[in-house]
Image (cartoon, rainbow, N blue to C red):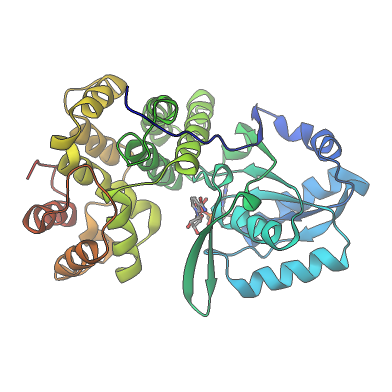
Length: 354
Ligand code: NAD
């Protein structure tokens, strides 16, 4: 056993079908008396209904959360929070709404209850990305970690099937890299393997039938575990590539992850034989990178980075960006092999070991 450091994040987790019914009790238990409820415009009706059910425990609703947590939206939400004299924050939605809740907690130190409705996993991380004048900056702070997370599978039943598959594969990528990143440790690896097992088993079933309740429950359980991985360790080559591609070509976040993951894993594989064995056991296959590629097809992931609109000469740019400012990776970054990896991902070919 190698030396390791493991930092557990605080937080109370409730999981199941119908857990939303426990919200009022959780608000009181957390010592809040008047909460501001947050959502995106798309989920405004849903959060209004929750606010109504809370009666006096609801101070009001702010339903204008946006992607990438724009500072201007946070300022408006902050004004609303202060004028309503709220003493707690309830975020209902995906990473965008949860990001706004975190941004408010950072500025006010108020407690948060988060009710996630996607598989993105932000609720389990001390990470906040905020955008000011078009520039996104990421910070890590324990102050943004929610005190309570309430997972209600019922609320994910309507998550569109395509978004479910892609955001689920994005979560799987967090757990895969948790197994071999610099901060890898036995506890996070246990959580990662279980998260990968649960999500990769559930996502193809959801692609077949979005109303499969057992698959929905397994997927949300896996998303919690994969989010926990992202919250407790750093990441490696795969995340570097996805950030570089998304930043340079504005490709959709989750789809980029789903496409790149099998290739980044195939690249790193020679340096991580034990992790590949574990992943093979978890996925029930001999070639984990190929199996992840197949699952991408089963959930309807786009056919390569080309299908996301990235230009072919962008491959050289991503190689340069990755080499200039690399993340630590078990297999160091090599120009030619990285180029081959990106060519495979670009054309939608199966992953190969270069
Ligand atoms: P999202 O929150 O942007 O949601 C996308 C759309 O789907 C929204 O309109 C939302 O209202 C809607 N939606 C959410 N749940 C739904 C449901 N169950 N049924 C129907 N519609 C639903 O999407 P996301 O992928 O959850 O979050 C993406 C954002 O989160 C990005 O900005 C990303 O950077 C951030 N993120 C942050 C972290 C972190 O640790 N800080 C982790 C993961 C993602």
